Every structure is written in structure tokens, then in C-alpha cells.
Length: 214
Image (cartoon, rainbow, N blue to C red; front, top):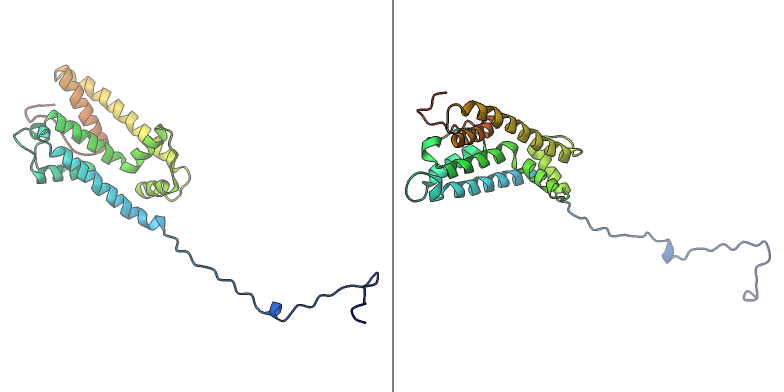
């Protein structure tokens, strides 16, 4: 009798759930560990600083970097490299007499990178070659610049580099005009370039010889 039953027009079919379908549904969700990139940024900046000091020390250790025979004493190279990277201006050897022109040129480059900041300069180079700046790099830039926001950091870094280079060029021209009447042309240009970079970055390195009176 029940098997012959057929719904009539207008009847509603109500489906009763089975007992096993009425039980609670348990879903297992695996917890993923999300590593904080922001927390690791200061450590990476310290590591980059240490690498920069190590590279600078290695360059200043070269025999052609100083007047004398053999390699530069390790402590002289390490102390001077650290002072140049941190632009503190502390020296244990006279810059003008101890270091060769090649050594002074390396010091000028180290001061330039240390004064601007490695991440700021690296960001400028990435933009210059058309590379995209990743989120991790933006976090590092924020830490190095002490900024609070992520937006506009790349533009800020590029602007800092361009303004810094522009001011140093102006300083170079002004010093070159002044030194032109004191030194031979080649020496005047070199002294102007070195002290424009050292002066702008407040490094305190002086390449004047002791007998030079300005």
C-alpha cells in the first residue's frame, strides 16, 4: 500500500535527515606558522652592515691601498673600514700620508655607501635597472630609514639618492673652484671630489697633507 503511494498535486515532500547526518561535523584545520618578516629586518640590517665592513676591510688590506710593503695591518684596515662605513671619522693612521690614491678612492666609495645607507643605494640601483622592489626589501628599507609606513618608500629612497648626489656634485664644483688656485689641476679635482663626499656624509676624513694651508 505504501509502495503504491504517489504524491498528489500540491503535496509537499519533507525529507527527514538520517541519524548519522544529524551529528556534528568536525573539520580539522592545520595551523600554519607565519614567520614575521618585520622582526627579522633589524637582524638582516646588522648582517648587511657586517658584510659591508668585511668587504671594505678586505679592500683596504690590499698592498696597493697603503704606502709601504706587504698587506695593510689588519687592525688598521678594520678600524678604518668600520669608521668609514659608520661615517664617524675616527682614524688611527693619517689619511693623506698612509693611504695611497687607490686606498683613498676606496675610502671615498665606502663613505658614499655608508653615508647613504646600503639599502637606500641598493633600492636606487634596482629601480635604475628596472627591477621590482619586493615586499621584503621594502620592509628592510623601512627599517633602515626609520619610516613608519610602507607606501612611498621606493620613491623616498630614490629621491634621497638623487638629492644626495646632486648636493655632492654642487659641493665638488665649489671646492674644485677653490682648490684650483692652490693645487695642480689633477690634485685640485681629486681633493674636491674626496672632500665633497666626506663633507656631505659628515665622515670627518681629510685628505689634505699637513703642510697644506687653506
